[in-house]
Image (cartoon, rainbow, N blue to C red; front, side):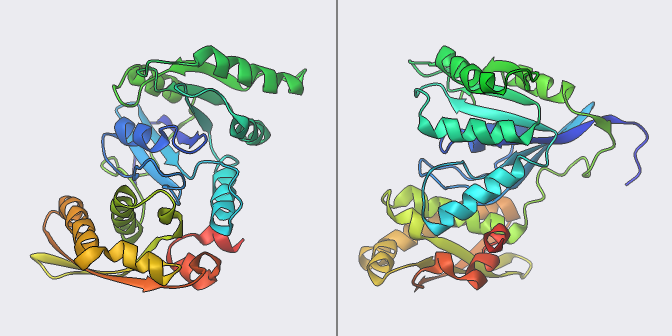
Length: 308
């Protein structure tokens, strides 16, 4: 790529506990849905880069798993991915949910952010809600950071925002831009994500499963794309949905296969907007006990960090 002038260019990792609105925030900032959203913790299982191009900047926002205290193997893998993302970035966008009071999980997140030794902007999200614990989060951060006495604070700004209503997002982008280095664009100017297509397709289907299923079951579900074949007017997608037990398979399929049909219809509608043409989705629900512990499956799902 040939570029004639330097602009502000860099990576800004979105960090925070699950369900603080990181994925919603990134999708709104880049004005494109690249990260799936649900109320279920562990919805985001990959590092997903969303690229915002402006005349004076290219900001690569990185959305990843929320850091949490769950102990099962997949959760530990996701925690490892989230922590690793903090170590190799230009800026950390620490997102908190001001509609909830700070909790014990926040302590762990702040500790990991401080270990990264990277400049931080705290995005105080969900100020559109009736209760906003803005001052509680500011004090919570200050109390934890004060333990590193004698060192200059790495937190540059506290910015109250609402990813839902768009309040203060323009100001957030400006502050992020001002704190990135000058350089040449890393991506073509019309690129919005480098997330591999098959993982993006799998995530769309997984999102629809999460939206339809009970709270406990989604942690036992994985979606693998075996093949994507573009035949001109129609894209054919071959999909495996993995669960741990036969009883879970029955739930996913539903009575008279109604649930899996509904999931297929919802998935196809969004996939057709991605591909710009008709999509045929061939879906197989398979029982694979403890798939979270099987290295081949984890690798095929793109959880490369799971092997380290």
